[in-house]
Length: 88
View (cartoon, rainbow, N blue to C red):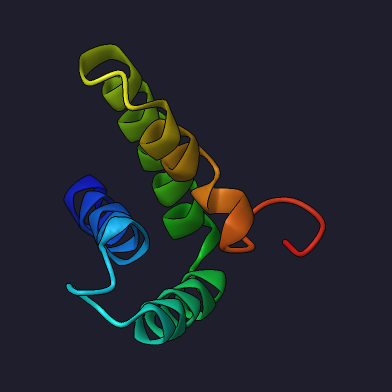
């Protein structure tokens, strides 16, 4: 499950951090929204695994690369995808 979650995180990072010459911005938003919608229909176990993975990946990035922007983006994925917070 963790490998799958890391792949999803990587896809979100790719879509958000890629320049417009790599992927069209509107297409990136549509893909991110579709992925978030699928995550919202995940089981509680799947959601928990994704949230844990986001926490671990964000911590790993902070400790290795120090890329605060990317670490914050990943840490906030559970909120921005609607898995936690008011919409969850």
